[in-house]
Length: 120
Length: 102
Image: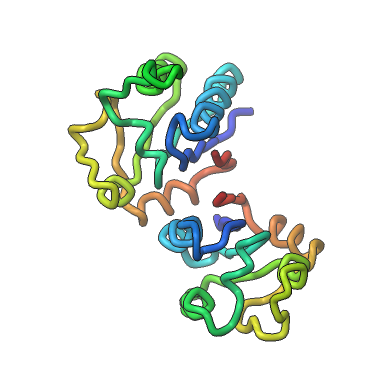
């Protein structure tokens, strides 16, 4: 019984463990053959910045883990475009992954189409 | 296919309620819990914004226990509706999914 599950990740990496937890939960769910998608919004969009160097703060680089999602059948990575705009982030500053940008209205559509939401 | 949005932080120091209002749509509902209930106090700017949200067809609720616990006057919240814990459960049953903004 496959469910449509959306993971919403709204916090920046490194400052708390939430972003990492979202990723761990996502990879764990992938083992159960569900239909998975990830939405990054608010400070969560900071997870996508290219050029992260977390070694300097003795942490694991976030940007290098995200590409793994493709191997795990995560169907889509969505990004809330207004969150990028508010933070002055251009699309070319993000890591090189297939990302789908959505405006607020499209995010609302996306949420409405899900059977289950997990928020981080 | 409607969503219940729960907000547990004060809108005066966090942007969760702002984000929630941006994503909310007709038929959805918002429930203020924990410090989120500070938005329900009449006379502040967020109470006014939520009143506008209600006129747009998105009902807003606040958890009565959290409100009273914080010394907020429960009788001045209108048009925000107060619910108890049973009402909280009922709201979750009336919507397909819950998104918690925390």
